[in-house]
Length: 399
Ligand SMILES: *[C@@H]1O[C@H](CO)[C@@H](O)[C@H](O)[C@H]1NC(C)=O
Ligand SMILES: *[C@@H]1O[C@H](CO)[C@@H](O)[C@H](O)[C@H]1NC(C)=O
Ligand SMILES: *[C@@H]1O[C@H](CO)[C@@H](O)[C@H](O)[C@H]1NC(C)=O
Ligand SMILES: *[C@@H]1O[C@H](CO)[C@@H](O)[C@H](O)[C@H]1NC(C)=O
Image (cartoon, rainbow, N blue to C red; front, top):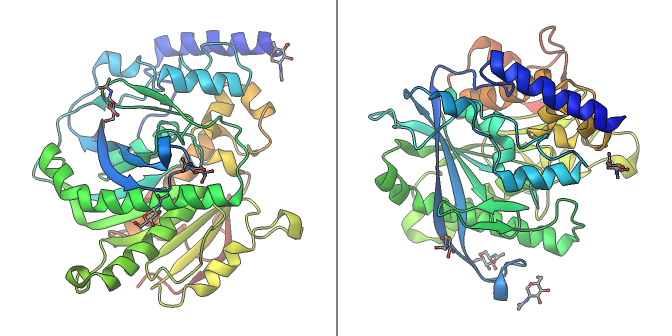
């Protein structure tokens, strides 16, 4: 039965493709979206997954605004790397092609930068052990279409599959890997080190690409362990500035942060920057202590000098909804049946809500230019237009 439904879904997909440009929701902003990949040097000497525990590079995919129109093949090329698509097809027991046939939402590889523009920069870190950042394309490309340059970090040998710009593909941990806490902390430590290395590498990356990456207005966010790592990076960067004479007087380039549905690991502290905790339906609020995350209220209670912070949960969303998998479940219903971490919110709506919250937060907290509608997403109380919003807590208005 499942096989029949699936092949129907694939046939429907192919027909739809012929009439519409893409079944994958394209970016909503005023710009087209380009992307490029870069290998960035780093030195991690306690990396659990690299040979001799030494990692020397990580991968950055940059999504950026462009005026270059997508070509017809930019709407038909698969949006996922075939190796990544195949891994998730096996994970969800799908027939080959169910995910690898999904077309790109019109992204333009190596597109011409806008030039003479400065784009606020966002660092994005994915979930621990994956998915790789290409499985967050629906969110990251949308941010770029609204003017942000998004730098998405992938760590080879940890993410299930990563492809370097020279074509070399590296398989990492199995999708359903069982982590222990020391491993989780080691992964977080590589993410922090990689993010600080990327901060230092930004001038070189800008010189190499001319993308107009802001070096002074940077937001940092991530999903799951990537979200915890975003908070840990804010702390590590402050510590580094305090201990390094040459950096002591320089204000932080990180101006806002966000953790999407990730339990916090490592020491909790005041991150001193506007911070959003965006959670699944009952994150940190479940009456069942076995099912609750005590690190969320603990983190919130420590944000004393942060100018403001918010904790918003999304009704109907579960942990894996905050990735493109939350959309795939609508195209390939067997995915929903095969993953208890996907909630009742529909794929199209999930994409709308997820995009709106992340973009609005950085518009407000990083750029200080949020519209009234964007600010309303973070205000206490119910919102008829956003019935998914569950206000859990927050401090102070925006300024
Ligand atoms: C990250 O850098 C710190 C400081 O150099 C180092 O102590 C730590 O081992 C590094 N983390 C990993 C996972 O290698
Ligand atoms: C690498 O790290 C892992 C996990 O931290 C550890 O078990 C292993 O012994 C290390 N291997 C080497 C060669 O250092
Ligand atoms: C995977 O799909 C095959 C063919 O549809 C089916 O026979 C098998 O039971 C499925 N396995 C799981 C774990 O769902
Ligand atoms: C491809 O790039 C990676 C990362 O820089 C490097 O480790 C690898 O050796 C390269 N592969 C080839 C075949 O050049």
